[in-house]
Image (cartoon, rainbow, N blue to C red):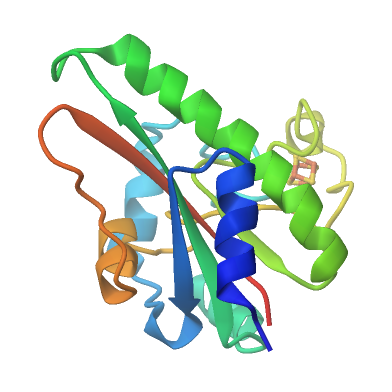
Length: 180
Ligand code: SF4
């Protein structure tokens, strides 16, 4: 039985601005989202075991998540000076990664079989062994990005009662953990 009050507090203690329950049955793995990876805007395409084309098909992903019913959504929200404030956007993205790695360490002790889906690509090893032509070091523990899984992040948030847009001059980064 998941204690969401405790989990949300753990997420806040890790630095996240917001967190809330995730109903895994709401997740839709959309080819049109996955297709955007190939444009390589995040510069991770074909550079990680956790991103396309190496991360497997959307059907593989659907198969993996079958084992889960409940999870946790987490967000870091940044306040921008204006909509060209790239520095704060980058800082907020870095904070999101730090918060994610901190909470991942805590949750892995409580849920050893969790499936983590981050804001960007897997950062467990630097660099990812994919770039060296070697096998993934932690094939059971790698972190997929939500977009690489074909998840439309804003829809995942709204489907689960968490805001995605915090108003003008804000930026929000979202990730999730599939727990049980
Ligand atoms: S666990 Fe390491 S080798 Fe595997 S995808 Fe993540 S960064 Fe790459």
